[in-house]
Length: 237
Image 1 (cartoon, rainbow, N blue to C red):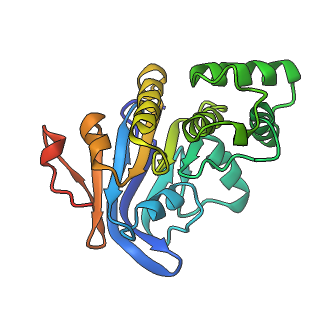
Image 2 (cartoon, helix red, strand yellow):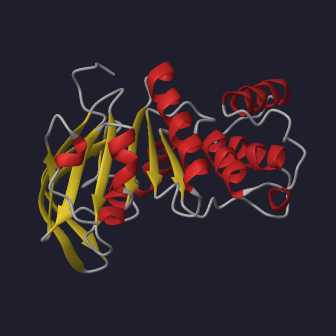
Image 3 (tube, rainbow, N blue to C red):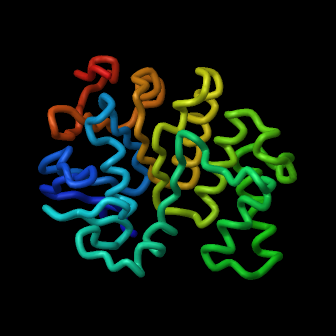
């Protein structure tokens, strides 16, 4: 995909939460290598934007595309293929607690069509090394700290080399120091791999310390804020 072509694009899009419109007339372009924050108070539609990108929420008004798929006209059978191009990281990790770290990652690879054992094992080793968890492959999730579990969740999100990582409050359950490590890791992936990051957060300190583009959701709209100093952005969270 060209650096000049957006990976994710919305034009005059109404974003739904259930049957209710929570954001009107969204215009947004996210490009390769972008680091984008979506911020705002609870209930302003941040997560609904994410769910629209992943085709969990329908797009009925306006236009939207993600990784080459029309979000308005996407066929049900194409949704899994769209999601393979998206790496998703959640606040609550969503690891399978009844199996090891390695088996969590194998489960995802098998579900997305990987069949060669040697290639599967190699890819798991690569992503665990990338997130600094290469010695934790045989641990169970409950044996890991919150920060370690989130690193495994990030490893899971990059298994299929996505074009973009969607991170929904990935530091929400973590202390400040651990959250710092997660942001450092996401920044490293963004810079070294050119993977775009779209991150929902309540934490203003995060985007002040790790600058990126900032979209603010309030008053049923979501618009990009611009300032040379992130601390000066007109944001109340």
